[in-house]
Image (cartoon, rainbow, N blue to C red; front, side, top):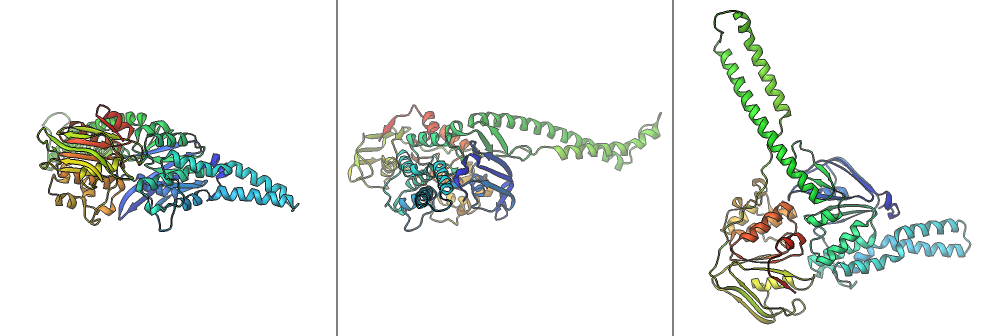
Amino acid sequence: MTSTASVRTAHLTADAVSKGFEHTPVVSAVSLTVSAGERLGVVGENGRGKTTLLRLLAGDLVPDRGAVVRHGSVALVGQELPVRDGDTIGTFLDTALRVSREAVAEVTDASTALADAEPGAPARLTDALARAEALAAWDADRRADVALAALGAPSDRTLPMTGLSVGQRHRVRLACVLAERTDVLLLDEPTNHLDGPAVEHLTAALRTHPGVVVLVSHDRMLLDDVCTAVLDLDPTPDGEVRLHGGGWTGLAAARAAERARWEQRYALESAAHAELTEQVDAARSRLISSWRPDKGVNKHKRATRAPGRLHTLVRRLEDLDARRVPAPPSPLTFTPPELAAAPDEVLLGASGVVVPHRLRPFGDVTLRAGGRLLVSGANGAGKSTLLHVLAGRITPAEGVVHRSGAISIGLLAQESSFADETATPADLVERAEGVPLAELGLLDDVDARRPVSALSTGQRRRVSLALLLARTPHVLLLDEPTNHLSTALVDELTEALRATPAAVVVATHDRRMRADLAGWPDLAL
C-alpha cells in the first residue's frame, strides 16, 4: 500500500481488462482512467460484471488479459463483508487507521530525536510532520467516531463483528474507509443498508474526496449527485463499453437515443441484406440454368455479363455482412404474475406489537386487499422486525397480529439465502410449484440453469424475487426490495407494485422508489 500523502496525484487505469469464470466471459476488454478528483459510476444489468470489475481494479482478482495500474492506496467496500472470529469494531478501526496512527507515532519519535540532538533529526521531523498533516492523522479517530455516528453504525469498539447484522457490518466497514482517507475508493452498492441521513453523509464525503472514487450503484440519485462520469457495461452496437459524462440522468437519455439508432440501423441493414440475398440467389439460378439473354444486339456482351453481376452482388453482400451491426439484444423485461386479490376484508393487522430491543410500540396496522403501506424510519428503528412479525416469522412479546386464514403472505427479506446453493434458479422456482421462471423475465435461459452459487449478488436477488412471486401471494412484504437490483428492474418493479391487486407493504430507504410511491400511506417507526 502506497502512502496516502499522494492522494491528489492518485489515479487508476485499466487497459483492455478481461476476466471470465468457467469459460464464461464476465468482463471483456474494459479500459478506463480515473484521476484524483474524478468520481466514476459503473452501471449495467445484473450479471454484467460490475462487481468483478471492481475486484479487478482493487487487485482482488487477476485479469485474464489486460492490466490495471494503481497509484495510491486502495480500499474496496463490497456488497458482502466476510468476517472472522475475533474481529471486532475496534480491530477493523485499528486496521483502517493504522497508517494515520503510525504517522503520529513517527512525529513523536522524530520530536524526541530532535530533542536529543540526533543527526538528521530536523529533516526527519519535517518529513514526519508533512506526512501526518497530509493524512490529517491527528483527526483520524474523531473522523471514525463521526462516520460511525453519521452512518448509524454501532460505536462500541468491543462488539464482535460476527454478532452484527449484515447492514451493521456494512456501515462499520464504510465508516472505516471514510475515516481512513484512502486515495482510491472502490464502492459496491454503498447505499444499501443506509437510511436518509446516512446517504446524505456519504454523498457529501464522496463529493469532497480529493482522490479517486469508483462506485457501482443502482441509486440513481446518488449517481446524479456524486458522479463526474458513468461507465455503462450494457451491450452497445460495436460491443464497446460506453463512458458518459455526468450522472444517471444524462446517461439514461444517451442510452435511449443510442438504442433507437441501433434498432433503426439494424432494421435498415436487415432489409438491405434480405434484398441482396434475393438478388444473389436469382443470379445463381440464372447461371445454373445456363441462362442466356434474348436474341438481339450485344447478345454476347449481355451473356458474359451474368457471372460478373453475380460476383458484384456477392461482394456487396460480404461487405454488408462485415459492417452489419448485431441485433440489439432483447432486454430482460420483468413480467409480474397476476397476484391473487382476496375479498374486501382485513387481510393483515397488528396492534400494540412490541419486540424488546428491536421494535417499539407504533400505530396500528390494517391492510385490506389492494392496500398499500410504506414503512419508514432510521436504521435500527425496527422496519425489518415489523415485516417479520407481520409474516409470522417473529412472535412479538406484546400485542396482537391478525392474519386472515384464507390468504398467503410472501416476504422478501433484505438478504438472499438459499438452502440448496447447488440448485439452479429454474429448479428452485419449479419446486415452488407456481409461475414458471421463464414467464417472469427475471433471468435469461443461461443464468436460469446455472447453480445459484455461481450467480452474482444481483442475480441472486432476482431469484429471491422470483421465488416470492411464483407463489402468487395475496400480501407482499418487501424489505429493501431495490437492494442489488439494476435500475431498469427497479423501475419495472415499482410499476408492478403500483398495479398489482395484491396488498403491498414496502420498507425502503431508496429515495427514488419512495418518491415514486409518495402517495402511499406512510408508517414512521
